[in-house]
Image 1 (cartoon, one colour):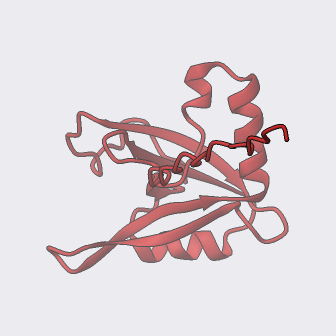
Image 2: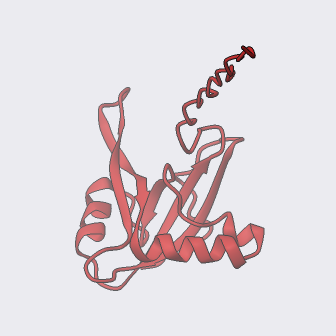
Image 3: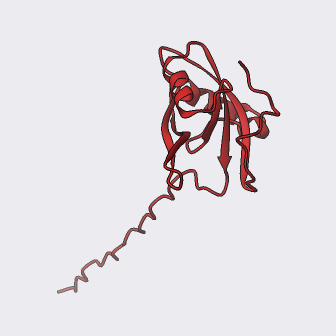
Length: 142
């Protein structure tokens, strides 16, 4: 069962969000994504999954697309922090978990990226090295 572009009942209003579709293929038992369940603290319900890390074939595909692709295409590569809205049209956390673990072949994902959310922790500032002046001893003639 595929997803239709008008299937938008999971969308909410978000000025800084971008939704896109991506397909992943299971290779050697892996879909190339490390995911974590997302939990809504207000309703105490698991809502779905967030991409924690992109690995393997998906990581290589992203690197090639970002290097040689058009900017609009490169923007639609799966990145850490993207929220998985549905997989093969399935929206429940249990159905998505079963597909991620067991579905053979191609998976069609609808993802949301929030540009207001930082994708990575800012790097720690590197302290400037302290350079001690070199003082050569003055030798007086005898």
